[in-house]
Length: 598
Image (spheres, rainbow, N blue to C red):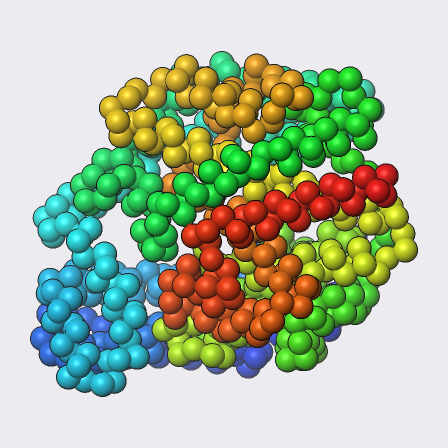
């Protein structure tokens, strides 16, 4: 069934999410839309009065949060319906209407933050003492006011705002160049056919079992980028300069500090991650040695790191089988967790199979007044089972967060979002490793896990180090020329791949194709997320005292504290090296386990 694309109405109800749990009908949605539209206009009544008294501040917060809840209920119903069938004209219209209403709300409410910032935080603290109902919003207000020293005057903010489109130009130019303008020529596939090489299909070729195809793809793609090295160097340099100037204007010590500020993450944590990985590169070198041995290569090149070590798992898993396996694997998380998992299936939180017009990929999406729904395009492969476990991790994180917090603290930060989902993936993998009698299945799972450690921890930390170094160079008055950038990137590849890998000259241009370098120090979160998940899973599976209870408390913390403090609830201290080293040990153990099976 998973391979047959049907029209939406042809899919069995039991495999479709039940959005009537949000609104019983589209008519009811439209009724609420009209009501909320009128309510939205009332937000202007608070203009000029928010910080005049404790009561005014309380009235504004309660009105805006209540209105926001109503808006997001409308939003999720329209967007989830649209994603399940983008060809449906009614859903297109509903999505457009609620998007416009949200835009209207944001425009009408744009006065609130500047108005709050017009008074000192001490005034707000006194309001909280005067009006005890404001105490529940203390952390919400703290998050707003910790930005105060980085917010400029109204006139200065207006000037920066007027340049907002220009400030995003480097990324826009990069996107246009790499998405539309670059042509990489053709490449022969396994059947000897000439196929146009693109960024979209590059992964398929670089993962080919045919080494000549991998080599050709690597050389054609990066060879093309080498022809645009000066243009992309200028684009990259301009983006770094934008972030550097903005950080300086907003009184940050560096663009790195500015990017970490929102999550309240100290620069020391970022640097400690890089230092810890740099001190443990020997495990990564072992992995490359293993690949070289298994693939029977005389020389291991950079284009030899992506193809599968073992054949893909051909075993098929029906959706019903996936449910059983996942519930068995996650039963270590306790009866209450399993009970919620069963709710997800029985109450139809999950939209399972592909249909005409359905959005591709997979996600978990929901908020305080909806179920935490899951969109899948289930294909009965092990990857689909793993994806389902991953998304259930997000959904149950949302469930626990919403159940145990008031609305204003029900949403967790992206910084911690991947922890819960990755915990589920790891528990699924280890469950199968411990219960399967099929060595090929075990080798496939271990191979997949090893690749995750290589790509999610080591590769992302190499990117993080590159970003840090390039921004620091710019802030010290250096010039980011193509040669400077490319040579540094090449040296980092030599460092991370080690003495037994041939670091091909063309790799020096790979930085040109990485879109994340325009996302402002984002990639380190991937490495932190996987490391934290490994630490938690190790503690739970090894029966560490209170590990499970503490993990549940973490899931229940929502957005009630800063991410670093929330992780501490689960006894995960990312200010130390222990968490990262625990993940590296797991990677090392997997390499040893693979060798015993091979």
